[in-house]
Image 1: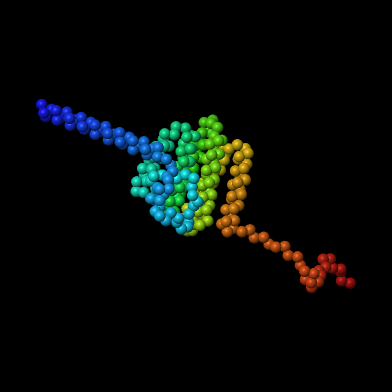
Image 2 (image 1 turned 60 degrees about the vertical axis):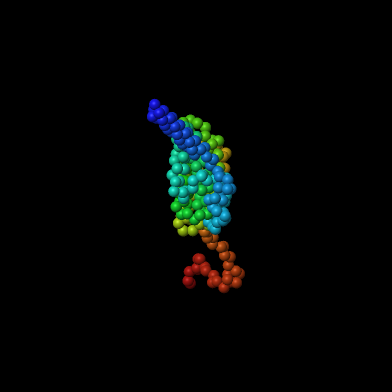
Length: 256
């Protein structure tokens, strides 16, 4: 009798433990999914330490914030898995474009942290995350348009955010040297390709404005890279030089 009672109690306790473990695991999973993209100043202090202002190169402060796991974390794959789940749960091309844009914003914020830490692997992962996700956002907008949806409003939102990323990388490229400068240049080229694709979904007036912006920005990039146009000055000979120069007769008279 006592043995049977103990067995029953043991099973009951075991069942309760299993249920609580399952509930805790579910709560943790939900928290990972709904974790806000930004972090507060306390988290930045924990990540960067007291010296939050690092030496160059650096990018300006970003609108969004990094995730709870940074690219230099040994468990960063969990953050990537969370982002994959977010994409999988976006059931329309427009929703996926928005998710990819959010991830790109997060990667740009993480790039700032990785630059402060001078973590080369983390910098590479963050940079690739920026332009790769904008490329996927552009592809999702293409898919939405092919489905007959109006994507002008969302395209403008994504395009405006991409412009901010370009400006941030402009600042970084002007400070960077060597491998980092080359990596930023690759990212800039990829962002431009994505931007041109996104612009095709804008209205006529917005498209014309963006084309002017792209051309103006391209001119600034060329000048900033050290390329200069050589213009030969127009030289007007002085009167003394004209007098000193021998006269040339184009039609000499025949010799008598």
